[in-house]
Image (tube, rainbow, N blue to C red):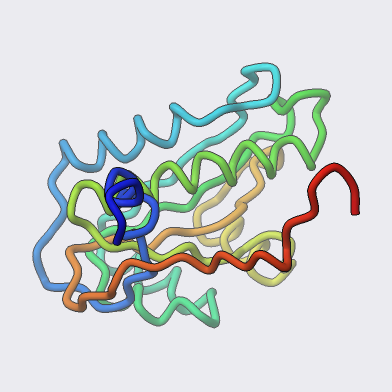
Length: 175
C-alpha cells in the first residue's frame, strides 16, 4: 500500500469477516462501537437510529435463522440490529432514515476494524420476511424499522486490505 493509503487503513483494511474466535467483546468496546455509530452524519441532525445490542447466544442464534446470509452469527459473540425510528427521521422520510442508519452502520464497521474486531453488514430492509421476523422476535414498536444487522467478533481469519476502485464508474462534470 502506498504511504497515502496507509493513513486510511481503517477504510481499506476493513473487510467482511465471517469467522470469529470464541473471545467475547467487552462492554467498553461495545460502547465505543455505539458511540461511533452515533457520530455519523444525520439529515438535519435528527438521529433516527436505534440499536439493538445482542450478547445472549440464544438471541444471536435466533437472528441468524432469520437472515439467509447470516450463518456467521452462529459463532459471533456479538450482534447489533440497526433500526430507525421513522417518527424521528427528517420529515419522517424513509429515505432519510435509511441513509442515516447506513451512515451509522458504516461508522460501526470502520470502528470495529480499528478496534481489532471483525464484522459483517447483513441486509434486512426492505425484505419483508426479515423485517417482520425481527419485529416479532424482538417485539419492536411499530415506529421502529429494522434496517440491517451487524455480526461482530474477534477475527479468526485474515483478509488483505483492498479497494474496489473502478475508474469506469467515475464521471466528471457530467455523464
